[in-house]
Image 1: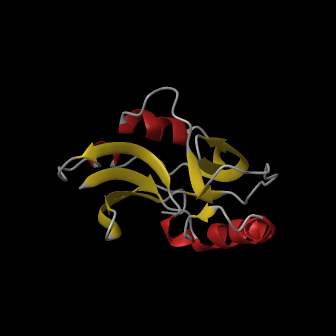
Image 2: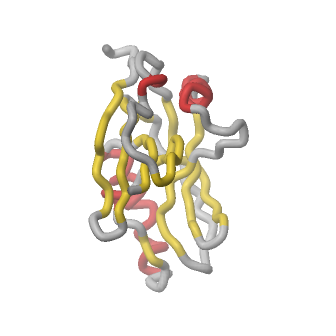
Length: 153
């Protein structure tokens, strides 16, 4: 079983990105588009590991305010960037033990051709971090969630 921690965007952010991607999906049907219910921002990849309270160090942290912005690729992964609006995303990354060069993003497709996407989405507070198990035959299963502190709480 492969484990990772992740931020899942809220439904209105997913819908906004889906609308922005619609013309590209039509123009590039050969790309392997990731289903929107699988869109996430990986915080930390744990690899082949058993669940063992990997989220413990994140309890009580401030919810980062972020927005999706820009796009790019590495290898055949086509992604939309995650831009921090406040300093809480860096603090979350540090608490999660990610490398200093962590570049948060949301993978939307796989393939070779990718026109740049000029996109800036709405701001959203990532109110929780999920521990996710990934199995190729089963997909994703959320095993644990840790709420993050928001100013509305």
